[in-house]
Every structure is written in structure tokens, then in C-alpha cells.
Length: 374
Image (cartoon, rainbow, N blue to C red; front, top):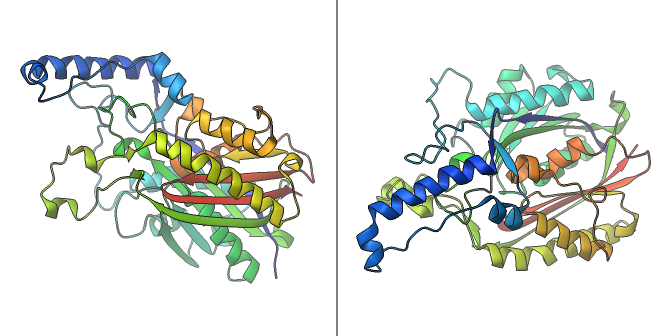
């Protein structure tokens, strides 16, 4: 039985930055036009008027101050309110693969590895640009990885941690020597930018990790995966119903049901205790206690969720050193969020320190990995 380590990570941040001020200005203009165009229906009670958004509302509700997206002009156009993308020819690299490749190159360089060393590629994300061929196979080809296999997987915001466990299992059993995981999250394309309650939530990034055998790693920094714990329980409180079936159901492309939907209060009430109990039980299985964990790299959906989970685990308010927050800069980046936190906030830890990488989201799904710096 081999030991599995994370030996390299990479991050690609989307090129366009949108501040809360810009976003609020665009949304409020959209709302003003909507209310003016539908004044009679609003007066008759047939349609509800749209209320304004504000920077204060966004920051209080989420902790988000800005987000990066693949294209901002369309998002900030009150007549469009969605990214403006150009269709690429089939022979060109897809947008999602392009982002994944950029993050992968950094992860490979940090691990001291090349394409010749990788024998499995997993593309894990909350939504794929297409059904087939797999984005993972496109990434494998673009990087020049001539051996092994590649596949896509989706467990919503837990995709990255679930993929990490798959990589770990392949290393432990000897099925793979080195695994590349990529998490290209282009969340802006599925966000309802016209919905005041969620128009600020998501951003776009891609992350990547190299997982390999501990006795073969070349990296100076290595994180052993001591254990993984996955759990799912069905809930319809976070969902997107868009898919192949939509056009056969004769849905309007602008149907609100086709974009990201969530019952925010229910999610907060139900997921926070689930995540805290999940992490505590996982640590107990390994003979560890939350107080002995140096850092928690939590899913970056909402600052209040992370604060509550941290408090439940530690019995006190978690500091930024205990559980770093990156969503103020990147917003919610689905499964990539906890990986961004790990990528940016691990260098200061010492050998022997323990950390927990955890994500949670639609499903409900929760994935956690306990790491130790070697």
C-alpha cells in the first residue's frame, strides 16, 4: 500500500474583475428599466416590482467584495446581464479546458512533474461546458499526456474533494503513480444575474492539484493525505435544472429554473451543522481533535457559514488564521474555493502540522480530507 501526497497546486483567475459597486450599478439600472417597462402589470399586482441591490446588502449577506469572471461587459450590460462569449470552432481549445490547462501547468511545475509523469487526469467541476468528449480528455491532450486515462466528474461544489479522494485511492492501490486534478469553475455562465438575491454570488477560476506516491515525489512541499470522508444526502435546496432535456420540454431559455437556484436560509440552517459534524467525526476517526488542527480550508460559499462551522468545531470564533477566507476576493467559486484557500494559505505551516480541506454543496454533498505537512 502506497502513501498519497499532494505535491503541487495551481490557480488560474479569470481575467475580468467586477467590483460590488459595478455590479450594483448594472443591476439597479436593469431593475429600473424592468419596473418602468412593467409599470401597469406591477400596479395591477400581476408582476412584482424589483427592489434595488446595494454594496452593503451584498457584503453583509455574503462577505464578497469582488469577483473575477471570464467576460464582464455582458454581465454589466443592463439589456443582457450575462457574459458575452464567442463560440469557438471545434478544433480550438474550449474555454474550460483553456483555464484548466493554465492551472495545471502551475501545479505540475510546483510538483516538479511533466506530462510524462501523469497517468490519470480528473476534471471535477460543478458544471461542464459540454457533455462529451470529456473536458478531462481535452486537457490530457492539450498538455501532451500521452499515457493513462482521463474523465470528468460532477458532485457540484464538492467535486474537487471527491476527486481528491479518487486520486488518493488510485495512489494507495497502485493503480496510478501520479494524478492530475483540474477544477475549471466557470460559474458566471449559470448565474441568474437578474436575481437580486443571488446576482453577486459567483466568480470564475480554475484550480489544479498533483497527487502522487509519497516515496516518489520530487517536491519540496508535500502534504500527506491521511484520510478522506465523503457523504451525500439528497436535497433539492440547491439546484440547476438546465440540461439536454430542456429544449424538449420547450422551456424558455430565460426561464429562471434554468439557472442557479437555492433556498439560502434552508441551506444555511441544514448544511452548517452537517459540515461541522462531518469534520469532527472524520478527525475523531483518525484520533485527532479540531483544536489540534492548524488550519481549515473550507468551502468558500458564504462567510457566515464558515464562521459558524469554525465556531462549532473550535468552540470559539475562528480567526482568519484558523480558517482563511478568499471569497471576499474571488466570490463563490464552487468546488474550486477550498482549493484556492489551500493554494494561497498553506506556505506558513510547519512540518507535522495538520489541516482539513473540506467542501460542501448541492446534493447535499460533503467531502473532507485530513492532511499533514511532511
